[in-house]
Image (tube, rainbow, N blue to C red):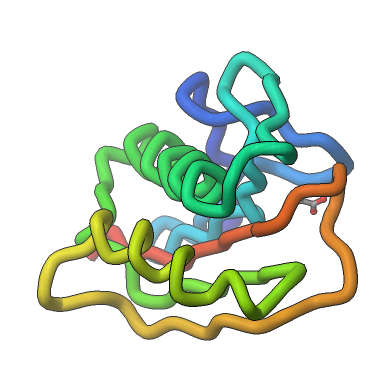
Length: 126
Ligand SMILES: C=C(N)C(=O)O
């Protein structure tokens, strides 16, 4: 059965979606944009800062379920400029150990709120 997950350690949704949902085993985070839990948008910051905030938001959402980054199975990274890949990847690698989750990283034309990166994750509580 679906259950909505809510965390104060990640920003509120900027649209008609939940921060995350779960079926009791898998946790699906919404795409996290570089916005602080207080609602400050970091769209003018360097890609490293934006990626760090997006990943920190994922940590915040997962922590509401007692999970952490090591529980993530799959990540999708959306970039508005694939030339940011290396810098994003450097920051990204700081959040994961040797057993990194599967990942897709793609360039998209535009992202909400003028941000440069949006990151979503699927984690397992099993
Ligand atoms: C930011 C989002 N995750 C959205 O608009 O769906």
